[in-house]
Image (cartoon, rainbow, N blue to C red; front, side, top):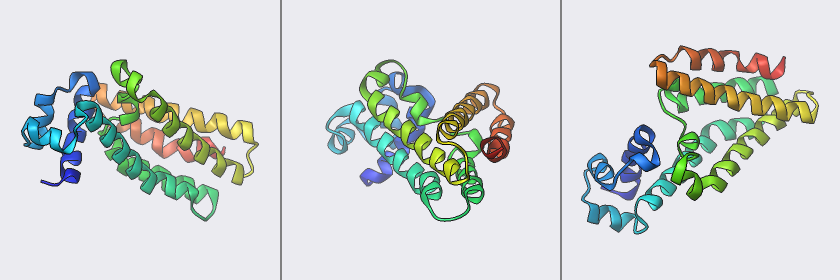
Length: 180
């Protein structure tokens, strides 16, 4: 198994159990690798595994959502495409947000700056598109922050209610709320 395959298999364990709730035994079981093999790929242990997964997920989010927002085109179409990318990225809300998972307890102490930077990047890029659409800069930032809050809230509801409809509604209505 390659390191990239191992990273991909680590994601569900961290998403399901969080950083503190995920043990090396769980990570070993998730990957099918012994603990020695995990340490071969990730000498820094669980914190390195989580950091690597964080970077991988951030890269994937960048390739889908951020690339869409940073691209050329009409702001409304960029926002609609970004919303569709979010729907796919979060599997209609079935995938918990890794940023949220890494903002609790011990994980927050380890990854706070990385989580903050990733959120700020998302807010900044969304706000830039809103400014392109003619919305005043401060209002654009507030709307971008509100959009992230709505997405995060919907992800929590999906997880607790085991129902993707709240996430689907948020994503469906987001372009209108942002540009309205």
